[in-house]
Length: 191
Image (cartoon, rainbow, N blue to C red; front, side):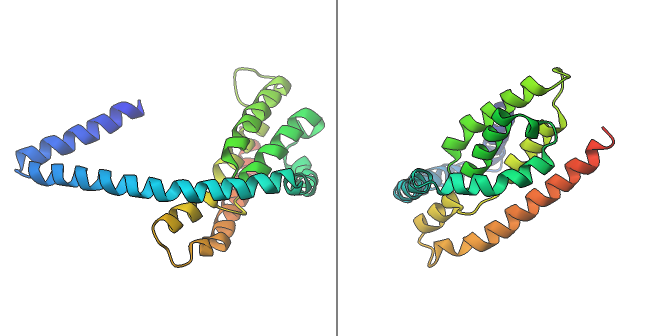
């Protein structure tokens, strides 16, 4: 569906540009934005490799497991049904921990596994459980301790201090997660 929406927006923009006589400007804009996109991607690749390496070191050194141990008691409180199952809680912890360190590629399999484990525990297989909805909200909020993607983008665009985003990102994502948890807990009482 989203492909149709994007196609419609692009086609409509081109048609309006041609009707208004701005076809040359549209062509020029497409070429310029394509060139700048390539420059950004090339700059981003190096920084992403660096941050993926740093995150891999954090994972191999046991830092992510230590964070998981710290998080487990808190997650046992907010996930009522999944906290009773070690497999489900383990997958939840690993997903959230990987997301916190910007290891989204590593987080995805843990997220899928967590959803599978929670579906196994779910009594009504036709709809998501409260724990599944809460897990989805936490993944959308994605608490970030090291927002490696944003740092990489800022560095590739020659920011003077690309890592200055760390504390605001921690505050914003932490606040989003807290608000999401509160909303989920309130809505669980009514639905």
